[in-house]
Length: 400
Image (spheres, rainbow, N blue to C red):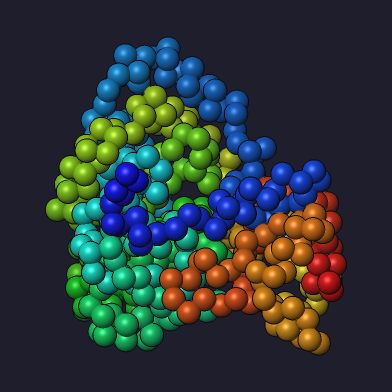
C-alpha cells in the first residue's frame, strides 16, 4: 500500500526555483536565479574570531542545550541592534531567536492559521511564504504592488472584503519586486492594522542592504507614531543576508501573547536554535564589526545593481521595463513585447538556459493572477563583468 500522506501537502508543490537549479549544471552558465548573498562578502575572519572567542570564553553555554526563546546574550545584542535602527525601548524579552527568519514565518503560520483562513500577501511576494501559509490551509490573497510597494487603498478594500487572519509584507526592497514602501504608505498600513485590528507581519531581511540613502524606518520603528498599531504588528528579522545564511540566525518580535505561543510551537519543532551559532552571532555583534561589513556589502551590491540596470537598458532596450533598485538583492523586470518580442518569461527562461544564462520567471511569486511577462534577476552573486555578459546573453535569447 502507498504511504498515506497528510492532506495539507496537497496545498503546496515543489519550489519552482529549486527545480530550476537542477538545470544549472551546464558549464559556464551565468546565474541570476538565486536569492543568495555572495559568499565572497562573508566576513570570514570576523566570524572566525567571534567563534574562537565563544570557545575561549563561554564553551559550556555555547555547546549545551539552550533556552527556546534564544541565547540571552544574543537577544540583548539583537535588541541593541534594533534600537540602533529606531525601535525605541525594545527589551530582549520582546523577541525570540529563530532558525532563520523562515522559521519565524512558519511559527506565525502554526500559531495563527486554521484551514480555510484567509491571509493577504503582496503580488508578487516571497515564494516560500506562499507555500508556508498554504501548508497550514490558508487561502492566500494577493494585494497589488507598484514601485512604492503595496497600494494601501487596494489593501484596505481586500481587508474589508476578506477579514484576513494576517497581512504579510516585505516593505523594504521586496523579494522579488525590489519595491520599497514609501513613508506615507508605511503609516497608512499601520493605521489600517490598528483600525481593522488585523495582524501585519513585516518581513525585513533586506532593509540594511541599501544603496546610498537609507530607506524609511521599518514599520516596527514607525509604530510608535501610530497609536494602537504596535499590538497588531509582528516583525521578522535575519542575519542571513548581511552576515551569513549558514548561521541560521533570525528573530521574531511580536505582541507578548503571540510570542509566547510561538515559543511553545518552537519547543515542539527544534527545542532551540543552535546555541553555538547564536553565541557566535552575539560575539560578532558585540565586537562592533557589523557597520564595516554592511558598508562593504552595500558598496559592492550597489555597483552590481547599477551594472545590471545599465546593461538591461543597453542590451534589451524597450523590450523590458523595470524600476532601478535602491537596495536589496533583486531586480524585477517585465517583458513589454515591444516590436513583437517575447512576452512569456517562462518561454524566455528555457531559451536563456541554452544561451548560458539563468533567471527565475515571475509567475511562482504570485498567489493569484500571475503575470507571465515578469521575471526576477539577482545581481548579488555575479561580478560586474559577468553581469554584463549574462545580460548580453539574455538579449540574445530574447532575439531568439
